[in-house]
Length: 387
Image: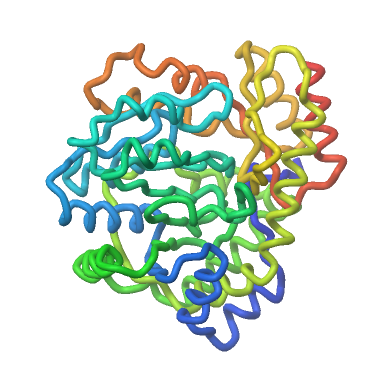
């Protein structure tokens, strides 16, 4: 196969790369621009989104003796690694089969006397609606917004990152805004912000070597292009994460990464609009097709899809679609193939969280990134309809 479209990608232009190899722009400038976008006064950059989550948990732990961190049962397993490293207890709740996100109604059963925080994950780039009633019921519980897959998504005209007590982003490979690696905490000023800064300073190591970061970004720019991705697929697939990390490190962010972040931020509206347009085009093409379930996207929601999720009622049909699209040069992914309670021993039975278990077993994710052509969307839709 000569050409292959990756399931996730952010196009890095020549001007993006020139910004990295040229004069470094200020990390302070990136923080200011990002702050204005997500309506947060304080931004702290670090080596990954997972590191940012761990730093938040470390700060929260210092302010309370509560130990439970509530997560959706279907999300990135690496979040559990951060919770445990912080000396806290992961507690799970099921997802909604309608939204593919955490079922917010189930949070009414959370014990506020034991719960340190609830992690609101915007899966696939689809914003999770954090209701006012929930805030009233859990008024003494922090809500941490996980925006790792959702940069550029919006709800009721507000960008994600501005919907909870504190939020974090990932800039890793394959994310909507990528600087190869990295992430940040976004928050308002106040005593808790100072606690987060202190937690970061206590744990942070040095930034990665700057020139190596620049070379990796140049390699990533080539790698996501279909003409390169196909011939190099066997090699590139070795770098994909297939299991949660055993540990995590908190390191500093680099100036060259900030230069890339600033360059992408200048055109993020166009990139996000393309993700939304492609995802909704797939939604339109696939609505009403027998044997599949699609997420509900209300009119007040504008997802910048990191990938487009489709649930297949029959596994044979899901696998047939994946094979057919692979033959046509379109990569798909089953994504996280197990819910969290089947990845880690968290004290739950195998049959707990049926919605998360069903999603994990029946899911196939399709590309929705800005590098897609209209014909690619048509081919994906045709493959699903014909299977």
